[in-house]
Amino acid sequence: DRSSEPTNYRSFYVQADGDAIGVPDVAQFTFNVLSEGGIDISKTQQENTEKMNAVLDYINDEGVDKKDVKTLSYNIQPRYTTVRCVYKEGKVCPPPKITGYTVTQSAQVKIRDFSIISSLLKDVVEKGANTVSQLNFQIDDPTELENEARAEAIQKAKDKAKLIAKESGFSVGRILEI
Image 1 (cartoon, rainbow, N blue to C red):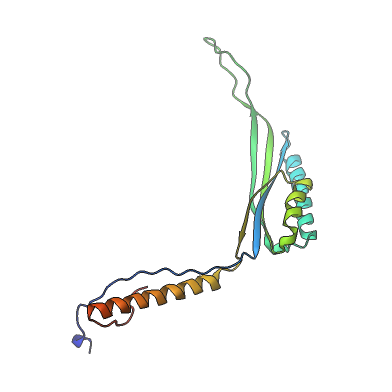
Image 2 (image 1 turned 90 degrees about the vertical axis):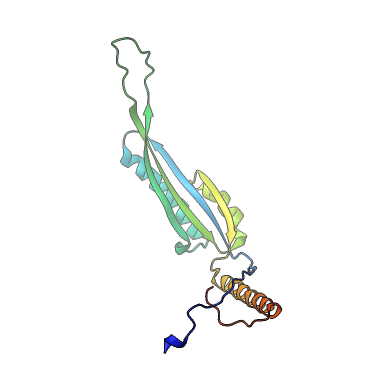
């Protein structure tokens, strides 16, 4: 029978943080392959794809698993040329004209063997990448560390709540919200 339960619970709020420290086990970087060509988009796309495939083949040959390489973007952008035009009354300047296209592909690589990072960053450029950026080190699966930090935070909050309750003359019940 729920009617015998109190209608208002007395509660209070405590906050605590937990920390967990781990050593990074993967490195990630991003690279771009950019190709500029003329009006023939398919030729520029083919050139860009060949360069990208050469970089990807090299990365794979160095022992990076295909599942650790992912495409981030693929862009085709027109390049314009404007005709210098001095405005005179009654004269209309021509609009910019497309003179070619730029194709850019971006990919992200996850490296698990730290001993190949330096050579990989250098050699992807030699194999056809135009830029290499955003090198960072991280923990591939932070779930265990996050759980460890949560457990620590919960324990600290419980200890804080018990101390406050003891000093204030009441007892701690069950946790209502985390």
